[in-house]
Length: 297
Image (cartoon, rainbow, N blue to C red; front, side, top):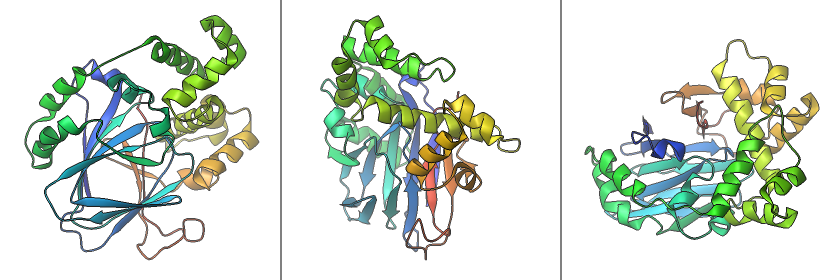
């Protein structure tokens, strides 16, 4: 598997997009399997020569010959997801920051983002441009120009942006009731904002956010990492809380998980390579694992 990372060029779009990547298994002799972990980011993938089979906690991307390109949206899944690519598949993905994709689609995305993966035609008009990128053409500026033209907003998204910003302040997080009062919305409306636009409830989103924060903090200081300090800075109440939530998301304790990762693609993508012979994430440490680091601040 080959993967190339691209930064977001358009300054306006950087608020909503994290990065792009181009993945190819063309010429590979064997399947590639990796584990994707919950992140809060929302990848929108364009796939060439691909079809999908979805199972509980597992997605298989099969080689399906042809020149057509299809799109799939990855939702806010809450448990590790095993993904297997057969050889000869090409993927171009737009990795949106949390809530970012919602500003480019007029309808509420909560139902879509509550699914692990959703084949969609939301961005079908971008397929010809993506086809150029897949063939090596310099069409990223054209892609961004067309994407920026699709920008939409509404008051609900602005309220949700405000809430998320307060959630991100790990040192001083006001209670949900206080945030609701400040925004003049009811607790029920508060809950629905998350479900309608992100597909998860506020508690689940805070769990994703703490995980993202812990990962970012750990990756920034791999050599001198103090996990007690990382847990506190990421917003966990104490070390048992840190360990419990981390195991819930990754199936591993923080120290075990973080000791296995390495960085590729300008520190945006976290890889862990294992043997292709493994068949169980919990039972065998020798697996192929890839996950995405969230927006580096």
